[in-house]
Length: 230
Image 1: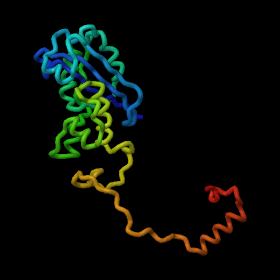
Image 2 (image 1 turned 90 degrees about the horizontal axis):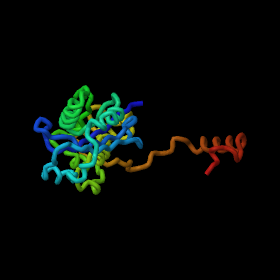
Image 3 (image 1 turned 45 degrees about the vertical axis):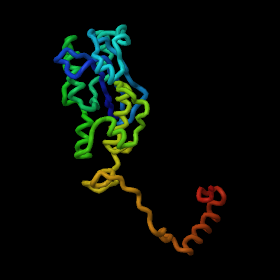
Image 4 (image 1 turned 180 degrees about the vertical axis):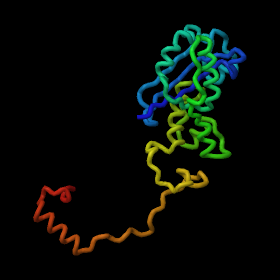
């Protein structure tokens, strides 16, 4: 059994070195790459004002966040949920940089960057030259975006879990029926419709063999034969 955590954050800005902080963490548990019912959503008081430009992105206001706990009050809950498992993140450098800044403030060890599975890196390898935003990948895979009028850490984690599953080959990730060197959609990444045979294959059994089989079933098994079930 493989456990992974899909993770996303919302922040007051783009760089913790400029004093910006995390205001939401969203996590979804995957077992063998499939989401379970376990998730975590934490809103955090950043102990500073949220710029209007950032509020336009995620819709989280100073008034909404004012009564939420500070990071020190929720850090243990967060660390317990993620455990030591791999973290699936879209643009992992951004989120881990912010998480490590918050962890440093409360005297906790940092999260190693090597622990992250960055879905942007996977998308770049699979679709060279394409656009790699979460929105674009959702559109590529036909994932419903109607609920995403603004960014949200838990919502984006849910979308990313679906994108990640598609990027690694769908629900049957250990089964590959494509020749080596070809992606799931063909060598050039384009969708390929299934090809139907122009004519059905002829029966493998002769009429005589079919007749002998039916006689055997009728004589030896009677009406209880599984072959007779319709």
